[in-house]
Image (cartoon, rainbow over all chains, first blue to last red; front, side, top):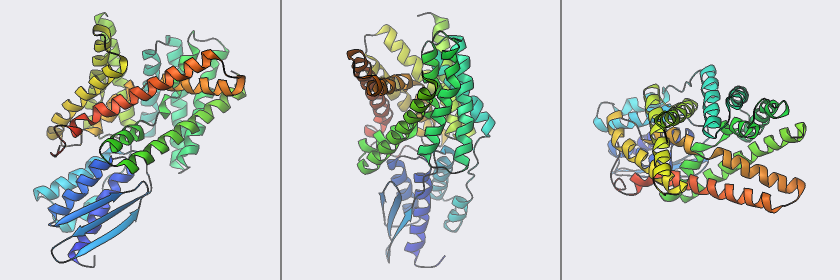
Amino acid sequence: MTGSYANRVNDLCLQIGLLLLQNGAEGALIESTTQRLGRALHAEQVEVTILANALIVTTRTTENTATAVARCRDQGVNFSIVTAAQRVMIDVENGTLRSEDVSARLSNIDARRYPDWLVVLAIGLSCACFARLTNSDLAGCAVTFVASAGAMAIRLKLAARHYHPILVFGITAFFATTLSVPALLYKWSDTPQTAMAASCLLLVPGVPLINGVSDVLKGYINMGIARWTFATLLTLASCAGIVLAMALFRV
Amino acid sequence: MTIPSFLADMLLASIPAAGFALLFNVPKKFLLWSALGGAFAHSLRLLLLTYTSLHVELATFAAAAALSFIAVIGAKQLGAHPKVCTVAAIIPMIPGVSAYTAFIAVIRMNQNGVTDELVRTATQNTLRVFFIIAALAMGLALPGLTWFRRRVII
């Protein structure tokens, strides 16, 4: 790395902030983690601006000031990366990690996800539980399990190809509805509407919704509105998928 | 409310909490905590709804706030931000079926014309979704807005 010490610290702060922003951390956590890392590396002041698609960090040391902007590509939610990045910051604060190793530790964070089959199975079971919690009968729960697990498998396949999330949500909702329609058409269940609704619940954008509200509450209003807008768009896309399937099967 | 139905509620809430924790890639050692958190919050809400006259929004808010305070206190021991566990844990309380019902009602209004029945369904469900999600987020944020406003959590 070249440049002044302020530049080097600034780059590290930007790197950790970006990891948090890309993987679903809320604004308050991004700002506090970035600032604490900077201060642990003896910066006098670290200021962070969080935008929906970029991060701006300014670091001031006794000699110099550095500012940099990084473009952020959203990578979905990955709390393992968020936890690991935070761990790096805490290790620097505690003095167990030297400043020259920070960048390598951050670059080598394990980004692996749980195996697809496990997520598919777990989400299928989860949606079946939602159906049960909404008083569906057992046949309805079984249909929900199959439909939502199938839809989740499709969602993971589409996401792996890096399709736009809006497209992924729309197509997934289409298949979730399509797979649960037989419960209504062939009268397998006495509560087919609940089964159809529960099959689509794997598409609830829980993290952007919760982070959006908490960003607005904690003073990151721009970020909060951006998250809400995106969550709304994802929901509308899911709706479009559901409508398309319902129109196709005339239900 | 019988004890078996209460236990069933805990179990039914813990599975989606763990399932969504897998989807959010929560680290392995926190998966169990997500599931327990989900069971705790959902069953606490059920208790409040059954034995007090609280409305569902307030009961949701109380359950989310209780979960969040416990998580904030526990976060220091576990060494991770409390949101890592709590966001997955409140997923079972998100009124997804209401949201779905509201959307379908709106679509039916567009396709078949507006009726009083559809307007009622859409309005009631939309309001319910809006208030419950606001209650969940406020409840989760409560520790950060009060005792921990100027303190670091971990």
